[in-house]
Image (cartoon, rainbow, N blue to C red; front, top):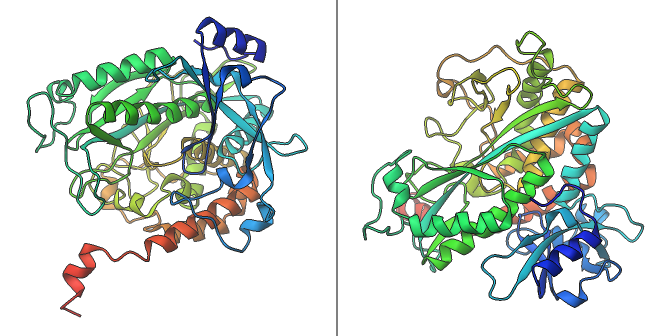
Length: 454
């Protein structure tokens, strides 16, 4: 594995040993898209430096920018440069490249050497440093769902399940079916081969409920490294799928009538002083910090929904009795709630945030869920009583649209303080642009039901 403390000279040795001829210098933007530049190996030096305009990491999924407003209180209207520095610990081979190629994630700094606060990776670093200052080591483990779909080049045509080895497409629910996964053996052989070459910490692969819906689990680790792995994994699966004449999509709700795709995140905290999981007391019972963390999630998740469900499509997933939560109830071994505590040993006690969509930026989503829990512990927020029944029978407690979610995020000052006010400003302004763009589109539903009836 790539080491946690990897110097630039060790990085150069790593590149030389693999005879790398080209470097993809990557920066994850607000959407999670890989931005950056491609350099010949000989041009990739520690003192060279690389620059990109600030707005490159602060644009929406449509590539648009706000024309005016608070966005430009943070982003320079003169389109200033960011100074990019490679994080040597992130280097990976690009396994599908024809020539030996490496990819390296970069951090964004301003001209004074400070991290650019609205870059997603900077936000996650900021939150992790808050845990570090308390003597805590946050530990997370994402479970990422996605769909395999037939190639689709016309956005007006609905998506459908791809054809597998049998020559047929799935038409029924195949949750946890081994044979259904084996339909796509050639694809997943490539995925696992790519992941091995990239040293990604992937664990189990399962077939989820939807037709062509899969889930990959990651081993638990530090949040920043795992956000990098999710970022790399999304690129990897999309590339592998296209090589097998299909698409992989992480849309939260790509197919009408099928369940949506989530990124469930298991999280716990280890004391750096004792090495003990602080969610458990010495006698193995749940600690007060465990309950406070849940309380923080319950209080702040609604305001963080614009980060957990970042697109208009995201809210189609969050519907009653369809494998996604509608509220912030919590419970033990209960998949109907938004905040679940799996059955585990005292050392492995953890909390699972089931609200987050697969479409969320992994850096922003991890930063936000950790921020909610951090605030819960710091403010000693008590949770509601445990839900021991079907949480779908309860009321909606989450925003129902992106517009509502953005209002809640703007109003929550505690989250802004932890995540950074400049990040929240840039993020909400960009999402408003996306929302306005969506509202210009007239859907088939509107034509079908309103054209002649209203």
